[in-house]
Image (tube, rainbow, N blue to C red):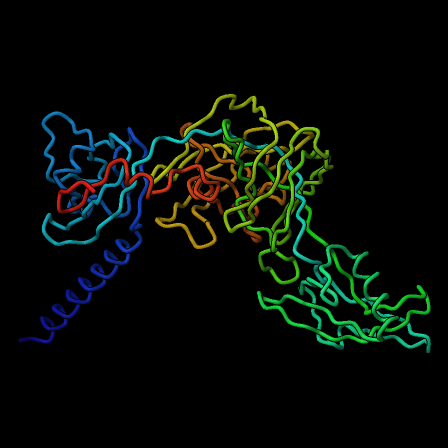
Length: 452
């Protein structure tokens, strides 16, 4: 056998191995659990080139076939979910879907949850977010001038660090900076030392500190700056017109010193008037400048602070003149690359809609909820903000008449682009999708063809 022929065989095998690897790597991105609305086709989008998509078939058991609507004359044994040739989900319930290559080689089993379409009111309202935490957060140090004129910082000496959360002093729960100052002075005068209960990375430890008498304030101090919560401007994404459950921001609120999730004690959202814009540019994130309106326009509690946003219940319903009626929520593979609209407030309380483009849709969301990449293309908003800025987090994105998701993060080196989270994930967190176990009691089928 000649050298040229051997090299040709090796090259062919190498190319085949690469194609095989790419194929199965792409296939692994298909989620094992999938949601589809009643009345929608069971399709998965364009993960593979058409020649490969045409070789991947889907099938369900005979019992599950009765849960689907088929076109007249359509073969019920196999369909092509990656080419859009598939039946329509007819009733809520659970279906086991089997994917095969060439109709023979088993590839993946997918747990398909069929749900009634969920409709919500689109947000876009500018909100002020006020969070109270468990304890007080250490934000920095402050040197204490002692009776001898020297500077001291007892807390730093004891090992306290920025981002630590002081949950108690001598067993007394603390909630404010004033309470910390009072207790430190009180116990220092009584016993000379004070013991702090401090939470760091989920672990609670005790620190004994000897406060210094400050000759300027005439009080005992330990040299700390603390704060008892967080406040900022964001955007309401959606709310349910019946239960008034809402979702906003699309990302977690973190401890700015440690980037860890803030432990929520309680909190609320209020209406905000946008009074100015600091325009963003490459390397510098812009922001909305807002004035909190207390409970005048928007009012609601905050029950959850998670990777997918903040969630709670509004005290009253809100209006949106751009979308006065509830819209359906996009699920499964309904978010696609292409044009969409983003709603947000840039001046006062007026909600405006701007053109954006969904550039990349991830087959599976990342653990922090990032589901797609969005680019701002509207010249009007680009001239006013430079792209995505702080305060736009939670701005709803509507595509093809459905709530697709919300803006969450901006690319620092390209403020025209950022990440978005799917509305489906936010609905799950808000409790607006029926739990899968509840659907199982309605309709369920398995590969054995028996009803559960």
